[in-house]
Image (tube, rainbow, N blue to C red; front, top):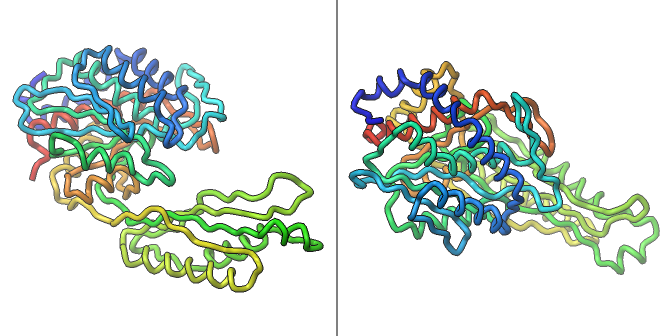
Length: 390
């Protein structure tokens, strides 16, 4: 399939393309189940990495590599090979080996842990060579498919940053894919600070004190102060309280507690201001208790964005509208930030819709996935044909 019909031809063909992709439903869902059932907690993604390498090999790709950070890259050479288009998805997950990774596949939905973030995105990545072959899509430029490891939590995009710093071919344009949020377009990245507050008593203190209240009381004081920090609505800003851990049983007051948080904003100055406010809150609680109350920061990102008028966001909007989907613009705190910070034109898109929100398992709709994949392939064709370049 050549792109001589122009951008309008690519867009007008989208509904038919989605139906044609439906013919590969079995392989798409098989890859989704197999990816999702392999635990890949950050820093321990090796089993999923081996599976992806094997799957790319089965697709007939000869240029497959992994690096020191366990990123997997498959390169499909273009007919001319003048530019390099990156398609990226994070391969790691927040779920440990101890969580049940069994996937349930129904007629209309697929259910399991980590599907939206990001087993379905990784499955799309590894299915892409088969989709392109089935559709007869021939690209002028090189296509680089990368499943990035060590991106979440404390890793803070370590793996993806390593890949971008050491990739042998310069990346000209990129699309980041996520399993959930079909209709989402991200072309701006948030500034962020990721950190942890710890409260810890010496064991001797805990055992020596009668009616020892435990670390939860001091952590509650920290939480109260953090929640009292004013957070502006414009520019978009948030303080995300990701997890709190303390204690193990009913009858023993915990001697330690941890709080993980992330500050996000479109304005770097606001991120710095809120970080300072949290630092002061921790210092104040620390001064008023016999516990040690400490703040540690292990991740920072600067905000950035493509201009709205850049051709890439415009084509992404037009692609969704051609599929009768309403574009929803939102900033990203993921892989996109590493690309934007390196002045690489890039966007993040979603592939399907949730059928409900759950704490662990995610139930994802199957039918919209074919539109999501049609969106991805049409974006690749538009980029390859030069419609997304300034």
